[in-house]
Length: 325
Ligand SMILES: [Zn+2]
Ligand SMILES: [Zn+2]
Image 1 (cartoon, helix red, strand yellow):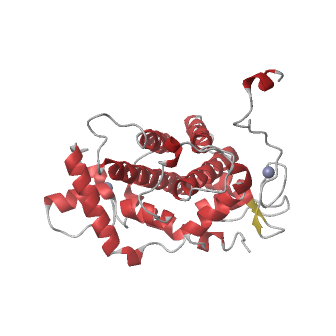
Image 2 (spheres, protein in one colour):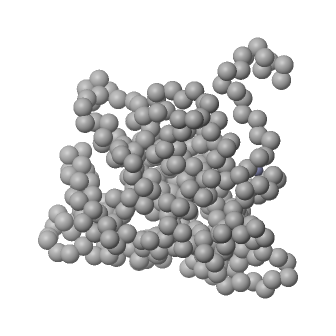
Image 3 (cartoon, helix red, strand yellow):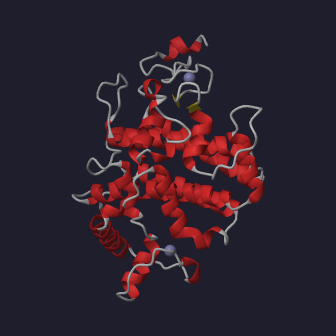
Protein backbone atom coordinates (compact mmCIF):
# COMPACT_ATOMS: atom_id res chain seq x y z
CA UNK A 1 0.00 0.00 0.00
CA UNK A 2 1.44 3.35 -1.06
CA UNK A 3 -0.14 6.60 0.11
CA UNK A 4 0.75 10.28 0.12
CA UNK A 5 1.60 9.82 3.78
CA UNK A 6 4.08 6.97 3.39
CA UNK A 7 5.60 7.33 -0.10
CA UNK A 8 8.47 9.45 1.21
CA UNK A 9 9.29 6.81 3.84
CA UNK A 10 10.23 4.25 1.18
CA UNK A 11 13.88 3.41 0.74
CA UNK A 12 15.33 5.07 -2.32
CA UNK A 13 15.78 1.74 -4.10
CA UNK A 14 12.22 0.62 -3.46
CA UNK A 15 10.96 4.01 -4.60
CA UNK A 16 12.98 3.81 -7.83
CA UNK A 17 11.61 0.31 -8.51
CA UNK A 18 8.00 1.18 -7.73
CA UNK A 19 7.99 4.33 -9.85
CA UNK A 20 9.65 2.78 -12.88
CA UNK A 21 7.55 -0.37 -12.40
CA UNK A 22 4.45 1.44 -13.74
CA UNK A 23 5.91 1.13 -17.25
CA UNK A 24 7.88 -2.08 -16.79
CA UNK A 25 6.01 -4.06 -19.47
CA UNK A 26 6.36 -1.47 -22.21
CA UNK A 27 9.94 -0.65 -21.27
CA UNK A 28 11.01 -4.18 -22.21
CA UNK A 29 10.78 -3.21 -25.87
CA UNK A 30 12.70 0.04 -25.45
CA UNK A 31 16.41 0.34 -26.12
CA UNK A 32 18.35 2.15 -23.40
CA UNK A 33 18.92 5.16 -25.67
CA UNK A 34 15.16 5.54 -26.11
CA UNK A 35 14.71 5.60 -22.33
CA UNK A 36 17.46 8.19 -21.99
CA UNK A 37 15.93 10.36 -24.75
CA UNK A 38 12.67 10.50 -22.81
CA UNK A 39 14.56 11.53 -19.65
CA UNK A 40 16.29 14.18 -21.76
CA UNK A 41 13.21 15.75 -23.19
CA UNK A 42 11.62 16.10 -19.76
CA UNK A 43 14.86 17.64 -18.42
CA UNK A 44 14.73 20.11 -21.33
CA UNK A 45 11.11 20.89 -20.46
CA UNK A 46 12.18 21.69 -16.88
CA UNK A 47 14.64 24.13 -18.49
CA UNK A 48 11.84 25.66 -20.56
CA UNK A 49 9.58 26.19 -17.54
CA UNK A 50 12.47 27.77 -15.62
CA UNK A 51 13.40 30.03 -18.57
CA UNK A 52 9.85 31.31 -18.91
CA UNK A 53 9.71 31.52 -15.13
CA UNK A 54 6.35 29.83 -15.09
CA UNK A 55 6.85 27.66 -12.05
CA UNK A 56 3.31 26.28 -11.99
CA UNK A 57 1.89 22.77 -12.25
CA UNK A 58 3.65 22.02 -15.54
CA UNK A 59 7.06 22.36 -13.89
CA UNK A 60 6.08 19.79 -11.25
CA UNK A 61 4.74 17.38 -13.90
CA UNK A 62 8.01 17.66 -15.81
CA UNK A 63 10.03 16.99 -12.65
CA UNK A 64 7.89 13.89 -11.94
CA UNK A 65 8.25 12.60 -15.52
CA UNK A 66 11.97 13.33 -15.61
CA UNK A 67 12.49 11.42 -12.36
CA UNK A 68 10.40 8.52 -13.64
CA UNK A 69 12.49 8.14 -16.82
CA UNK A 70 15.74 8.65 -14.93
CA UNK A 71 14.79 5.83 -12.54
CA UNK A 72 13.84 3.64 -15.51
CA UNK A 73 17.25 4.31 -17.04
CA UNK A 74 19.03 3.43 -13.81
CA UNK A 75 16.99 0.23 -13.43
CA UNK A 76 18.01 -0.84 -16.92
CA UNK A 77 21.61 0.04 -16.25
CA UNK A 78 22.05 -2.28 -13.32
CA UNK A 79 19.64 -5.02 -14.12
CA UNK A 80 19.72 -6.25 -17.64
CA UNK A 81 16.49 -8.10 -18.42
CA UNK A 82 17.48 -11.35 -20.08
CA UNK A 83 13.86 -12.32 -20.70
CA UNK A 84 13.35 -9.34 -22.97
CA UNK A 85 12.49 -10.06 -26.58
CA UNK A 86 14.33 -6.96 -27.71
CA UNK A 87 17.63 -7.83 -29.46
CA UNK A 88 19.96 -5.70 -27.34
CA UNK A 89 23.34 -5.13 -28.96
CA UNK A 90 26.70 -5.32 -27.21
CA UNK A 91 27.17 -1.52 -27.18
CA UNK A 92 24.01 -1.27 -25.14
CA UNK A 93 24.89 -4.15 -22.84
CA UNK A 94 28.16 -2.57 -21.71
CA UNK A 95 26.24 0.41 -20.28
CA UNK A 96 26.05 -0.81 -16.71
CA UNK A 97 27.52 -0.30 -13.27
CA UNK A 98 30.75 -1.89 -12.05
CA UNK A 99 29.06 -4.38 -9.77
CA UNK A 100 25.55 -4.65 -8.55
CA UNK A 101 25.36 -1.33 -6.76
CA UNK A 102 22.10 -0.16 -5.29
CA UNK A 103 20.89 3.25 -6.37
CA UNK A 104 21.52 4.50 -2.82
CA UNK A 105 25.15 3.33 -3.08
CA UNK A 106 25.61 5.07 -6.43
CA UNK A 107 24.57 8.39 -4.89
CA UNK A 108 26.29 7.89 -1.53
CA UNK A 109 29.59 7.09 -3.27
CA UNK A 110 29.60 10.62 -4.68
CA UNK A 111 27.69 12.43 -1.90
CA UNK A 112 28.50 10.68 1.40
CA UNK A 113 26.78 13.35 3.46
CA UNK A 114 29.18 16.02 2.16
CA UNK A 115 29.79 18.12 -0.94
CA UNK A 116 32.43 16.21 -2.95
CA UNK A 117 34.24 19.43 -3.94
CA UNK A 118 34.44 20.62 -0.31
CA UNK A 119 35.62 17.15 0.69
CA UNK A 120 38.53 17.36 -1.76
CA UNK A 121 39.42 20.95 -0.85
CA UNK A 122 39.61 20.15 2.85
CA UNK A 123 41.40 16.85 2.32
CA UNK A 124 43.95 18.77 0.21
CA UNK A 125 44.45 21.92 2.24
CA UNK A 126 44.40 20.59 5.75
CA UNK A 127 43.53 17.57 7.77
CA UNK A 128 40.52 19.23 9.33
CA UNK A 129 37.18 17.49 9.48
CA UNK A 130 34.91 17.59 6.51
CA UNK A 131 32.17 20.14 7.00
CA UNK A 132 28.64 19.04 6.26
CA UNK A 133 27.73 22.48 4.81
CA UNK A 134 29.11 23.28 1.38
CA UNK A 135 31.14 26.50 1.27
CA UNK A 136 32.11 26.30 -2.40
CA UNK A 137 30.73 29.82 -3.03
CA UNK A 138 33.74 31.20 -1.15
CA UNK A 139 36.33 29.59 -3.44
CA UNK A 140 37.45 29.69 -7.06
CA UNK A 141 36.74 26.64 -9.20
CA UNK A 142 39.86 24.45 -9.20
CA UNK A 143 41.18 22.69 -12.27
CA UNK A 144 42.43 19.15 -11.80
CA UNK A 145 44.12 16.68 -14.08
CA UNK A 146 42.85 13.16 -14.63
CA UNK A 147 45.07 11.48 -12.06
CA UNK A 148 44.04 14.00 -9.35
CA UNK A 149 40.40 13.45 -10.27
CA UNK A 150 40.78 9.70 -9.90
CA UNK A 151 42.64 10.04 -6.61
CA UNK A 152 39.82 12.28 -5.38
CA UNK A 153 37.20 9.69 -6.35
CA UNK A 154 39.10 6.90 -4.61
CA UNK A 155 39.36 8.92 -1.39
CA UNK A 156 35.71 9.89 -1.60
CA UNK A 157 34.65 6.27 -2.04
CA UNK A 158 36.82 5.14 0.88
CA UNK A 159 35.18 7.80 3.02
CA UNK A 160 31.70 6.80 1.77
CA UNK A 161 32.33 3.19 2.70
CA UNK A 162 33.61 4.14 6.15
CA UNK A 163 30.48 6.13 7.00
CA UNK A 164 27.89 4.05 5.15
CA UNK A 165 25.92 3.61 8.40
CA UNK A 166 24.80 7.23 7.99
CA UNK A 167 23.28 6.72 4.53
CA UNK A 168 19.77 8.26 4.39
CA UNK A 169 17.18 5.57 4.99
CA UNK A 170 14.34 6.91 2.86
CA UNK A 171 13.57 9.21 -0.08
CA UNK A 172 12.63 12.21 2.04
CA UNK A 173 15.78 11.95 4.13
CA UNK A 174 17.85 11.90 0.93
CA UNK A 175 16.24 15.20 0.00
CA UNK A 176 16.96 16.54 3.48
CA UNK A 177 20.60 15.47 3.21
CA UNK A 178 21.02 17.51 0.01
CA UNK A 179 19.25 20.47 1.66
CA UNK A 180 21.63 20.30 4.64
CA UNK A 181 24.70 20.20 2.42
CA UNK A 182 23.73 22.91 -0.06
CA UNK A 183 21.45 25.13 2.04
CA UNK A 184 23.76 28.14 1.83
CA UNK A 185 23.73 27.97 -1.98
CA UNK A 186 19.95 27.80 -2.31
CA UNK A 187 19.54 31.54 -1.83
CA UNK A 188 22.55 32.52 -3.90
CA UNK A 189 21.48 30.95 -7.16
CA UNK A 190 18.21 31.42 -8.97
CA UNK A 191 15.87 28.93 -10.58
CA UNK A 192 17.32 29.38 -14.08
CA UNK A 193 20.88 28.79 -12.87
CA UNK A 194 19.83 25.62 -11.09
CA UNK A 195 17.86 24.35 -14.09
CA UNK A 196 20.86 25.16 -16.29
CA UNK A 197 23.12 23.20 -13.98
CA UNK A 198 20.72 20.25 -13.99
CA UNK A 199 20.80 20.27 -17.81
CA UNK A 200 24.60 20.41 -17.73
CA UNK A 201 24.67 17.25 -15.62
CA UNK A 202 22.13 15.52 -17.87
CA UNK A 203 24.45 16.27 -20.81
CA UNK A 204 27.37 14.81 -18.86
CA UNK A 205 25.41 11.59 -18.33
CA UNK A 206 24.87 11.46 -22.12
CA UNK A 207 28.62 11.84 -22.63
CA UNK A 208 29.37 9.19 -19.98
CA UNK A 209 26.94 6.81 -21.74
CA UNK A 210 28.71 7.28 -25.08
CA UNK A 211 32.12 6.76 -23.40
CA UNK A 212 31.04 3.30 -22.26
CA UNK A 213 31.44 2.03 -25.82
CA UNK A 214 33.68 4.71 -27.37
CA UNK A 215 37.41 4.70 -26.65
CA UNK A 216 40.58 5.81 -28.39
CA UNK A 217 43.24 3.38 -29.53
CA UNK A 218 45.52 4.56 -26.71
CA UNK A 219 43.06 4.21 -23.84
CA UNK A 220 41.13 1.07 -24.76
CA UNK A 221 43.02 -0.94 -22.18
CA UNK A 222 42.59 -2.97 -19.03
CA UNK A 223 41.16 -0.93 -16.16
CA UNK A 224 39.78 1.90 -18.28
CA UNK A 225 36.18 0.53 -18.48
CA UNK A 226 36.13 0.57 -14.65
CA UNK A 227 36.75 4.33 -14.64
CA UNK A 228 34.14 4.84 -17.34
CA UNK A 229 31.54 3.03 -15.25
CA UNK A 230 32.53 5.01 -12.18
CA UNK A 231 32.12 8.22 -14.15
CA UNK A 232 28.66 7.24 -15.34
CA UNK A 233 27.61 6.42 -11.77
CA UNK A 234 28.97 9.75 -10.53
CA UNK A 235 27.24 11.75 -13.24
CA UNK A 236 23.93 10.13 -12.32
CA UNK A 237 24.57 11.07 -8.68
CA UNK A 238 25.20 14.68 -9.84
CA UNK A 239 21.87 14.69 -11.68
CA UNK A 240 20.11 13.55 -8.49
CA UNK A 241 21.94 16.21 -6.50
CA UNK A 242 20.79 19.02 -8.83
CA UNK A 243 17.27 17.65 -9.09
CA UNK A 244 16.95 17.68 -5.29
CA UNK A 245 18.58 21.13 -5.16
CA UNK A 246 16.05 22.42 -7.70
CA UNK A 247 13.18 21.10 -5.59
CA UNK A 248 14.74 22.46 -2.38
CA UNK A 249 15.08 25.85 -4.06
CA UNK A 250 11.39 25.83 -5.09
CA UNK A 251 10.48 25.38 -1.43
CA UNK A 252 11.95 28.78 -0.47
CA UNK A 253 9.95 30.80 -3.06
CA UNK A 254 6.51 31.56 -1.56
CA UNK A 255 4.58 31.96 -4.85
CA UNK A 256 5.92 28.62 -6.06
CA UNK A 257 4.95 26.90 -2.85
CA UNK A 258 1.38 28.06 -3.53
CA UNK A 259 1.52 26.63 -7.06
CA UNK A 260 2.67 23.34 -5.57
CA UNK A 261 -0.34 23.18 -3.28
CA UNK A 262 -2.60 23.72 -6.29
CA UNK A 263 -0.75 20.97 -8.18
CA UNK A 264 -1.05 18.62 -5.20
CA UNK A 265 -4.72 19.12 -4.48
CA UNK A 266 -6.71 15.94 -4.94
CA UNK A 267 -10.26 17.20 -5.16
CA UNK A 268 -11.72 20.59 -5.96
CA UNK A 269 -13.42 20.93 -2.59
CA UNK A 270 -10.20 20.53 -0.68
CA UNK A 271 -8.59 23.57 0.89
CA UNK A 272 -5.06 24.33 -0.26
CA UNK A 273 -2.87 21.99 1.78
CA UNK A 274 0.42 22.92 3.33
CA UNK A 275 2.73 20.17 2.11
CA UNK A 276 6.49 20.67 2.04
CA UNK A 277 7.78 20.45 -1.55
CA UNK A 278 9.34 17.00 -1.76
CA UNK A 279 10.25 14.76 -4.69
CA UNK A 280 8.10 12.02 -3.15
CA UNK A 281 5.05 14.34 -3.11
CA UNK A 282 5.71 15.62 -6.65
CA UNK A 283 5.71 12.01 -7.86
CA UNK A 284 2.67 11.08 -5.78
CA UNK A 285 0.65 13.97 -7.22
CA UNK A 286 1.42 12.78 -10.75
CA UNK A 287 1.44 8.98 -10.38
CA UNK A 288 -0.33 8.30 -7.08
CA UNK A 289 -3.81 6.86 -6.95
CA UNK A 290 -5.61 7.83 -3.77
CA UNK A 291 -8.54 5.41 -4.33
CA UNK A 292 -6.35 2.33 -4.72
CA UNK A 293 -3.41 3.40 -2.55
CA UNK A 294 -0.76 2.75 -5.15
CA UNK A 295 0.91 4.13 -8.23
CA UNK A 296 -0.76 4.12 -11.65
CA UNK A 297 -0.43 5.38 -15.21
CA UNK A 298 -2.18 8.77 -15.58
CA UNK A 299 -1.98 8.77 -19.40
CA UNK A 300 -5.32 7.10 -20.07
CA UNK A 301 -5.11 3.39 -19.26
CA UNK A 302 -5.45 3.96 -15.50
CA UNK A 303 -3.65 0.66 -14.80
CA UNK A 304 -1.03 -0.01 -12.14
CA UNK A 305 1.18 -1.49 -14.86
CA UNK A 306 0.59 0.62 -17.96
CA UNK A 307 -1.45 -0.89 -20.80
CA UNK A 308 -1.67 2.22 -22.98
CA UNK A 309 -1.81 1.28 -26.70
CA UNK A 310 1.72 2.42 -27.54
CA UNK A 311 3.18 1.21 -30.83
CA UNK A 312 6.96 0.95 -30.90
CA UNK A 313 8.10 -0.05 -34.34
CA UNK A 314 9.25 -3.66 -34.16
CA UNK A 315 13.00 -4.01 -34.60
CA UNK A 316 12.38 -6.85 -37.07
CA UNK A 317 9.96 -4.81 -39.20
CA UNK A 318 10.93 -4.47 -42.85
CA UNK A 319 11.32 -0.99 -44.25
CA UNK A 320 9.05 -1.92 -47.19
CA UNK A 321 6.25 -2.90 -44.82
CA UNK A 322 6.58 0.45 -43.04
CA UNK A 323 6.20 2.38 -46.30
CA UNK A 324 2.45 1.80 -46.31
CA UNK A 325 2.18 4.09 -43.33
ZN1 LIG B 1 31.11 22.48 -1.74
ZN1 LIG C 1 -0.88 3.76 -19.51
